[in-house]
Image (cartoon, rainbow, N blue to C red; front, top):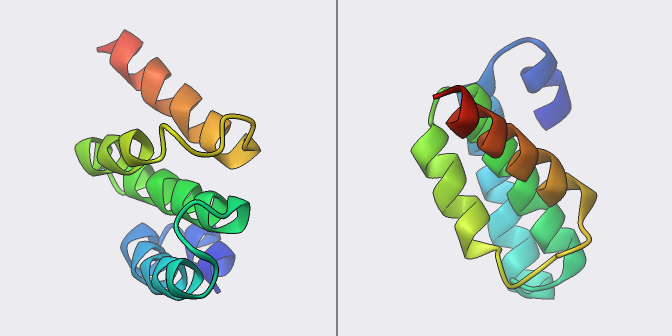
Length: 87
């Protein structure tokens, strides 16, 4: 569902759906579980695409101690770094 909404450019709806997924994953697996980190990183990407860069950065900063090798987290970190460099 999140991916379809994202492909349609409906980032706010996709982020709301992903936020619900994060809540369930956090409760069931714990906040530091690799799958939870992945869904959080995807949520950050959706926030970024919705123009909520500060919110995306806040999510990513909260994941700093988790998922050093997580590809989703690496992707959103790169997007945030590029947007900062572009100024």
